[in-house]
Image (cartoon, rainbow, N blue to C red; front, side, top):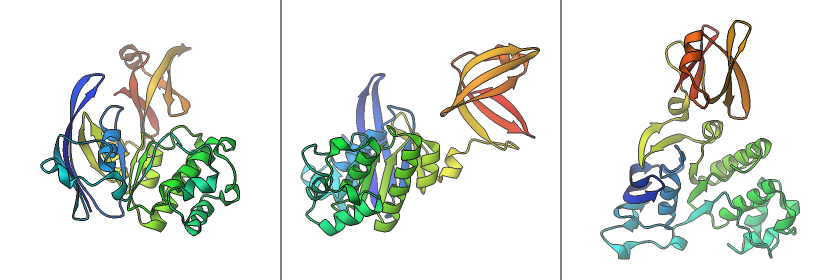
Length: 288
């Protein structure tokens, strides 16, 4: 089990913000961290990894102290934390082949070939990183993060730069690794479908604090009453077609049209974040 009770003052573009987190994460959980940029998600990962110090508090993993503000000597070095860390940046060694990138972490060819086989890239073992696509590089980076057989895998939006099809492929790979190696996984993501597909628990951060904690279905589904669905998007345009007011809303990578009544058209402005929902098969739009 991971016990986290930490405080750290962050200095962002909007001034100082206290990061104040208290959570317990069970062994084998897949926890997704979400929330707006600057809410403290990446800093929390870096603190768990030992890349950043805290002002107050402690982190205890399986009854071993990793960080304790009252006893600096009890700090567990990064290399002894049994952690795999995957960033957006692939960070592969350009002068080493795919296989050598993995063996640099641990000289275990059997494990390296097993990991490459899971992601379907065993045939690329002798290729150099500069000859690989972005998706292939990230899959190799994922394998490398697992070469030391970590107990905890930290993922900091590793799929955000990939196209949709490759994101889905990497999501499947991450899920396979999580289930096969029984790794406790903590992932930063802004993608609701990714969070829903992978996580067993979702933490929403805001201004350095956890404001929601639960299963993806309970945390992410934004419906109420008799609503059948609800999506959030940005209002791009309002125009008239005959006697109707039409809104164009951007939701993820799609544009949708919604008919507005006159009062809604007068209240909304271009650039507003809005919710599109439906009751009794009639879509409605409301400002967030």
